[in-house]
Image 1 (spheres, helix red, strand yellow):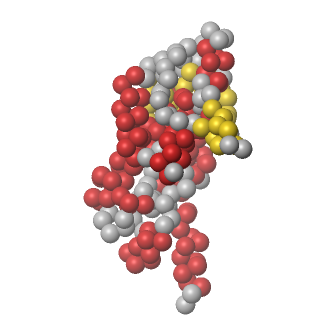
Image 2 (tube, one colour):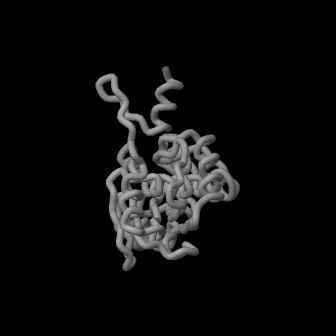
Image 3 (cartoon, helix red, strand yellow):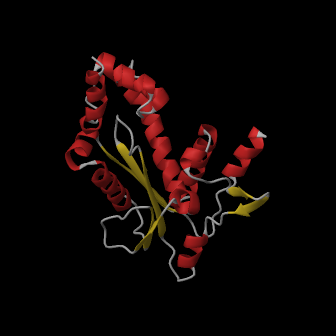
Length: 227
């Protein structure tokens, strides 16, 4: 049963009253292609809720008509599936780009503005100028026509592709250079999120230069109240 449920998620099927409803993840793209547009960029970010590290955004322009088998919100996919799709997306995309905003800037301008800046920089990094942006529940500060889609990483293949590129990029940073720089925090495992292990490591070891100081106030305030 567990294997079936995972397969249904990855193939975009929603179970309702014993019937499966297929999500058409090319509905937004197809409407724009029908208007004669070809360079449609999906845009998304990851790491918004983390205590540690950069927020990472990606922008992806896929070829007209390309169908990515099993694509979905990156958080709903297994690591193996994400990595396989990452390879396929980077090989077949018309253009793709990744941008990062570091913790000190997040502290300075707040996480929402940092996320939007990362998405803007990802779009500007594309080798092809997009004609329209499909963005996951946000707006990008650029003079390009765009559509913000709530839960867009589950509803649009282009946004899902951007989500996958951004998450794989950030996860590899967590498992690689960031884990090497700051062992003892468990960054490779929890990816910077506020797990019990991460919170305890912060209390034992203190924050690193890559921790978002503006996110840590409540954590240390709660600890002080215990003593």
